[in-house]
Amino acid sequence: MKLIRISVWHVPLTSHTAYYMADGKTCDTVETVVVALETDAGLTGWGEVCPIPHYLPAYARGVAPAVQEMAPMLLGADPVGPEALMAKLDKHLPGHVYAKSALDIALWDLTGQAANLPLHALLGGRRTETMPLYHSITCVAPDEMSRIAQTAYQSGMRQFQVKLGADADWQADAARLREVREAVGDGPLVYGDWNCGATSLDATRVGRAVADLDIMLEQPCATIEDCARVRAATGLPMKLDENAHDTASLLQGHAQGCMDAVALKLSKFGGLSATRRARDLCLHLGAKMCIEDTWGSDITTAALLHLGASTDPTRVLNVCDLSGYVAPRLAPDAPTREQGRISPPDGPGLGIQPDKDVLGLPDLVL
Ligand code: 0XW
Ligand code: MG
View 1 (cartoon, helix red, strand yellow):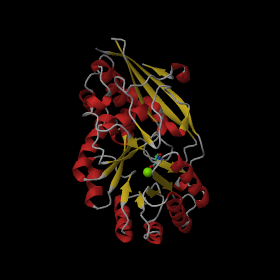
View 2 (cartoon, protein in one colour):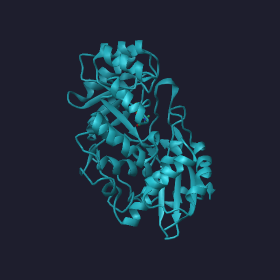
View 3 (tube, protein in one colour):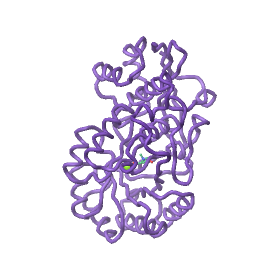
């Protein structure tokens, strides 16, 4: 089987509700990039990557030029066995992992379709029926955030990511964590995410103000060293996100003692192949994993669900139904949340069928 055509679409995704993070970052409407790889056997593999502006070293309009650069290595190649082809792409164009993420997902989709097996079977075998989701709460007034948490709790959610730092007011951040914890009661996981936006001073003050509560902190500062300082000064468990993006940073987070949990976003590492290797390293290091991506719709969500379902469930902190936060849905047959949990699709490959009417005409065909 040979790859004969590459198509790329840019699709604006709009969040159902406003979504604010520290440093003025938002993803109210962001562009997702969809990639289709067609073969001479009539199969089409789908990939997606959706960077949030100003969030990671990645941007939506950077994907198509990188794909164009890699196209000569892809066209005519056998897509079955994604890691072999991804290794060739890594030699041809080092880095650009977010663009490669969409290609790698599409290669896995084709490999699964060729094998007539769902990706979770090829990624090591299904370990669980359903996985817990977390609900990410936009950084607004503390009482509004506790109302959002309560509504999500009633829908079955038991894990809550409380966005912090939008107003640089550390006391408001402490109130956000306290009020959300009160709203959902003891037991559910509550964690505050600054998305790198705090100083170690402010994050430490917040952490110490809520140290009587069962709270985890996520990526308060811009460096692993500063996150480790906050972890040590507050005694609160910590999740790394933005700083954990490759083997070296996972090892560093672990060595610095601030990686109780970690966000494995597919596009930080370079797709399913690279994130599976990161997953295996985290199994060894003992960090609990949030298996997800930066943002996106049904294609990236299906991909992360397959990796999550093939991971030891005692090590999976949670997964994210990214497509549940945005419109339009790209695939009408994609899984949706039920009582705060979600399952991967069952069909071959990713197991979803993107809707060509929603996508329209591609922006680039190679
Ligand atoms: C990447 N986000 C902004 C979207 C996901 O829901 C989680 C969050 C994060 O930074 O963890
Ligand atoms: Mg985060």
